[in-house]
Image (cartoon, rainbow, N blue to C red; front, top):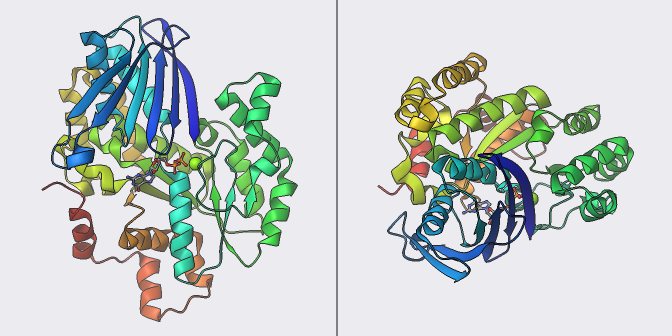
Length: 391
Ligand SMILES: Nc1nc2c(ncn2[C@@H]2O[C@H](COP(=O)(O)OP(=O)(O)O)[C@@H](O)[C@H]2O)c(=O)[nH]1
Ligand SMILES: [Mg+2]
């Protein structure tokens, strides 16, 4: 079970948002009243019959039933792209579209993008090709580990204890834990030294501020990188962000900021590609537009068509120009169940961290060169992706 929470101000009202992910359903609480509201259960029909992308069934379990709540529930479920049954508790003072948009943006910020799932899938994949892999968990709020960590930050500090002891919320406690890890970096260094002959994957916390503003994570990485390991940061972005030009633009800005802030070799990955079919009717462009970050002027045109984002025309233009000036971002698609995509991701990471030149796996010169220059047969690459669109 993983839990994320945040507080935002929408239309002058303080809004509390809590997102909890269980194995078979997600619980989402959205409230202006510091207490539960109407409880609804929402299912996406296409998850059952696979032919319709936006059909939701909504059932009120208890509380007020009215059209505003029903529409808000449908809007939120669609916008956050629910993967499993959504149990939604909602109590709002206003149901304006702008309020709902801010709420959706906040939920998308705290929604898990699949880091732990990736660490598990990639470690199994690498083991299957003969690598000796160890996963180290440095996410103190990680409770969804399908792998057995070789080292776990909870041996050092417990997120829940920090929350209880200092009266902090989940985000504040997470920041405290990362500062604690930075101060006690020797603990991590000892663990890494004991795993010397292993290929290491670090499962990191998801709070975005840790990679954009706060210094602890980049300083932890810097200390590990000093003659100990050759790190590469792997940044995961949920592919659902492609369904909305505003969300996609914010992902690009985020990737650029993180690349500059962390300062490591960097690979951006678009996760949950198998979910693409559910929203491919909302994609304005071909998949390669999103993965290769092609001409963003087309994105600006899309943003202009929406009255909400059109208001920020100058800001959007400036953001696009920053992304294009740095020209750092592109994405590798990933569905953790697809070995061909896992292989592409592995090759990109091997190239970024230099493993391709130093590992012990048997390879001929041609494979080595192909990996080093990033040569992938384009037809092969696109045909792997075709199956992810409902054509
Ligand atoms: N469909 C699909 N779901 C995924 C994929 N990767 C992760 N998920 C789901 O995303 C949710 C959050 O995953 P988790 O790895 O715990 O996220 P984290 O908080 O970023 O570590 C889980 O319900 C996973 O099953 C993927 O490639 N495809
Ligand atoms: Mg996790």
